[in-house]
Amino acid sequence: MTKRGTLPDVIDRLEPKERRGLIVVITGNGKGKTTSALGMAVRACGHGLRVCIIQFMKGDLYAGEWDGIKLLDCAIELHATGKGFCGIQGNPYPWAEHRANAQDAIDLVHEKMNSGGFDLLILDEINNAVQLRLVDLEQLLAILRAKPPLMHLILTGRDAHPEVVELADTVSEVNEIKHAYRKDIEPQPGIDY
Image 1 (cartoon, one colour):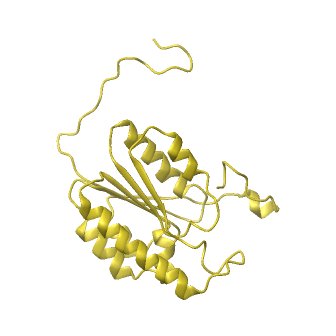
Image 2 (cartoon, rainbow, N blue to C red; image 1 turned 90 degrees about the horizontal axis):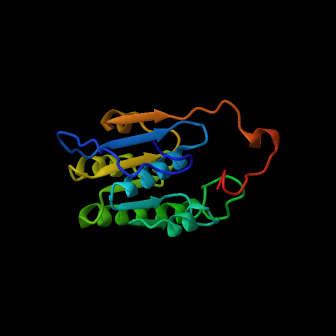
Image 3 (cartoon, rainbow, N blue to C red; image 1 turned 120 degrees about the horizontal axis):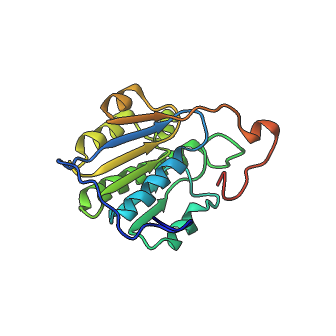
């Protein structure tokens, strides 16, 4: 029996009969898609997996996960490659600049995927990037088809394309029931970013 607030000393570990890299899609209009993927990164860290996170939209405004990941004693590499959310909230960058950044991120995905250095690759907001045509659907489908057999791949963002959903092993949809911003409450540090 463990004391309240502590972890047990001896833990049995479930070992699958066959290891297989999964494609996981977290989509929908609700809050928590990136948060869910970050939770899987922490879980992977606990199993000693090497993680790479490539953020397709984030990069122009601070996000708490950037420093949070630095505080973990984990093999997690994070790349914030974006220029913010294209076309919303007064984002000043033209579409062509967003597209160029997203294309650079696609090159980075291939580099990290082919390096053999990672067990889990998270493509944060990739679904949004496809929806906004910053990334071509065929580029994303090619990544899914080229994924190494033991690498896990997590794709986040709204509006996952049906062909992406079809190729995925696990798909979760986060639906909004209510959100504080609809009550004119500004995004809150540690919760929203």
